[in-house]
Image (tube, rainbow, N blue to C red; front, top):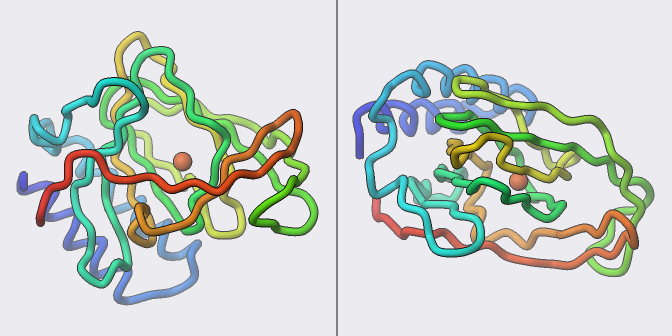
Amino acid sequence: MPEAMDWLVGGVREIVQEGGTEEEITARVAERMKPALEVPDLLSSDQLLVKQGGFTLNRIHIEPDESFSIGAGIWDVGQTTPIHDHGTWGVIGIYRGMEKEENFRREGAWVMEGSVRIVTDGFRLARPGDVFVCCTTDQDVHRVSCASDEPVVGIHIYGGDLAKISRLKYDLNTGAVTVFHTGWDYARTS
Ligand SMILES: [Fe+2]
């Protein structure tokens, strides 16, 4: 693993072990990520591999106790995710390209099936070097698209092993909620 990524993994481990509220943890993880994004070889060439079709989330590191995970998210030109949540906190830093992140608010009771009302809650454009908290467990619904004419590559850090978390997709028009799971692309041991 490139040295800068090792440094990032070690830093996130210390932050997570020290603990605190999700707001405190995500703020500190975001601070740790900023300098790492300036390192040109933060990602190895295999961590930048894009799969054919769909969104790529290349596994970089899963902490053995599953307290956090790090992946490289690659959204190709024109790609937009469904509106989704994560079931945990998350921090994203942009490495290449530009990303649009639209936030949504869930209204009413939290459900795992059926439907729920969601409303738009602003958006942001993120460029290389930008780091933002994409989610906390309570404020967690967004839709991400590539906003550049090259694929957008982001470092994604989540407060668990994302592949093991039951997550929800939302239909903005009908409010329909669907459970889904994402796997890691490019399983790498660390
Ligand atoms: Fe997301």
